[in-house]
Image (cartoon, rainbow, N blue to C red; front, top):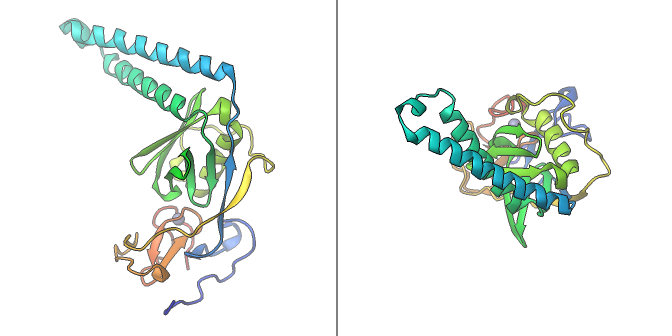
Length: 244
Ligand SMILES: [Zn+2]
């Protein structure tokens, strides 16, 4: 605990998003929370999945046939895009099916999907590289992980994810119109406390300094980016939140 210094100047109650000139630097052990959403199940969902998978396979096969059949077809300018699109759709359908019935979590630690008891796949806000909204799902990409949140089973969760992403990492939410999803419902989901993150052995985002002791870690309260207490920049390198 040595070397701790006051880092929470002008901390004003609510909001991890820095409105009102709040300094957003956090200690590792500061309280954090997230919302947990149970999926909404339906037969319709299963049929949709089946349809998407079939459509993806047909599209993929068609384009593949065209592309590899001859020189003429290969030169079609849209063929590579169609093929990529079909592959993505197929992948999305697979992920969609796999994750459709799984609880989703959204909060200070980013977005997570529960794959099983004690097995959570998570993307921190600071790792988010992009969000993609389709009619079927909201996809969160980042840190080598892709999380697809099916809208039919998880619309309230998707609304919270999109709203939080707009506040926390607005630069990564492009191409999604305002009002594309309903506004987040404060009554939806169950708010739960989060354990402090495991940060020993990781590196400071600003200085790359090894964080040997968890007490040396500081976090951006908005995007969760990690800093060594001796290398805190004035503003978060990832989300530009004021840190000191
Ligand atoms: Zn940040």
